[in-house]
Image (cartoon, rainbow over all chains, first blue to last red; front, side, top):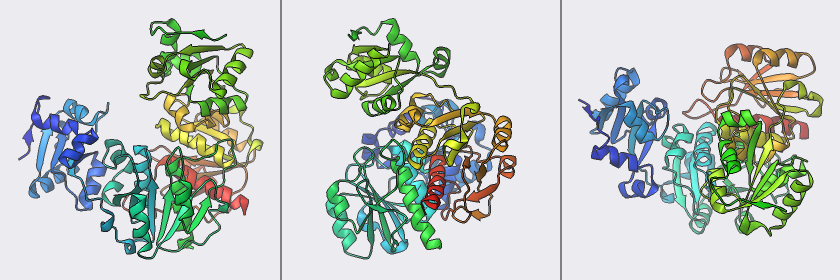
Amino acid sequence: MPREITAFSNPLIKRVRNLREKRHRREEGLFLAEGLRILAEADEAGILPDYLFFAADSAAHPIVRRLTATVEASGGEAIQTSRDILHKLSGKDNPQVVLGVYRQFDTDLARIDRTASGIWLVGQAIRDPGNLGTMLRTGDAVGAGGLILIDDTVDPFSVEAVRASMGAMFTQRIAQTRWEEFLPWLRSGPGQLVGLSLEASEHYRRPHYEAPTFLLVGNEAQGLPADYAAACDLRVKIPMLGKADSLNAAVSCAVMAYEVLGQRQG
Amino acid sequence: MPREITAFSNPLIKRVRNLREKRHRREEGLFLAEGLRILAEADEAGILPDYLFFAADSAAHPIVRRLTATVEASGGEAIQTSRDILHKLSGKDNPQVVLGVYRQFDTDLARIDRTASGIWLVGQAIRDPGNLGTMLRTGDAVGAGGLILIDDTVDPFSVEAVRASMGAMFTQRIAQTRWEEFLPWLRSGPGQLVGLSLEASEHYRRPHYEAPTFLLVGNEAQGLPADYAAACDLRVKIPMLGKADSLNAAVSCAVMAYEVLGQRQG
């Protein structure tokens, strides 16, 4: 039976509210995800929250009922609460009717099995959580294996990144590493490292990409460091005809990823 | 000579601060843009702010000096202020060193000259300002003529949209209209209307796109209404291999726009 929490002062509410901050997420090893669609997708991927919060007025919703049953059967806790408390937990004006508290995954590079997919996305020093989440969402769509995060990136478990991923958080493999570790790992097996660079001379639609392709996209403001680009097997650029000199990082990543997928689909 | 404002209570500061709200933007017919890069791009496009605010400690920066001179020569006002006030105006923890208050453009559909470009982006009921701004930025990059906004969209003059556009706000033509006006306008001249639709059967890389191509992307949550899709000359879909059933709207738009550009570049 779900317990009910109606008091803002409840210690669990405070704990969950704190998960919007990276420090608390790290200490607890937990993160938040919101929304029926995202929680149902996590469930389909076999991932259940430790705590499931749902709005009292949504208790009868079929997905909420199914989630409640599954979470309780797996030893997690389902908690009925108010819209006001969900608003407090999510920080959004129109909170979703469900919110899950999940255990963070292990993001060790060693857990990446490169043979699992012909496309891998690699982001270097990505700072915007929306971009990170959108890269995960795109990765899911192109059938990528996952997203490898290099150097100092925004926390992939941040509320904004999870939200932008639209559930791909739970279906894409995520690794966090540094360039010094990534490059030897990459060279220890098959893989074509393709760097997107404004200085490159080759049009991104020209080369034939070989699987597994690792698509490397640099930081939003600085782009890819020159020595990282130099270490790539291929450096390509996306043409830009306008006044501006760069695309949004998640957009560049998607244009490249769909070119690779397009070639494979023939 | 720039005047100096150091008091938070200054009426102009309050007025400018209010421009972060749509109601005030509409009443005043003004909007905000921040950052050296964006303001310099506006300047290059021949667009100058009515008011230019700059941080006192950046007064000697060559771009700030040039902007100050140009704004004053054009009858605008340059105002030296503190980082604290810029923080208050921008709402960002690390405010940019310059902020401009610009006059809103006329966004009447009649001002679109379709012969100016072979690609036009069309967004239907776009709700996220980041997506809207990113579409403008992508439009600039692919050499689009501009972005036509259909039905109830987020305000293109919102701070977040302007920020995400990275200056493309000033180089892309923007129109705001409704479907009932857009469709007759479109059919009154040349133009291939291509709708991105999850229900379409045609792979987006298959058709030959004819200039001017109007790429129609639907609302983030609902996608394109069925009757809008039915009215298109072509309905295409971007393949999705994963668990999720949709891409980010700005990402879909970019993948399509780069396919059209790629075909034209041969």
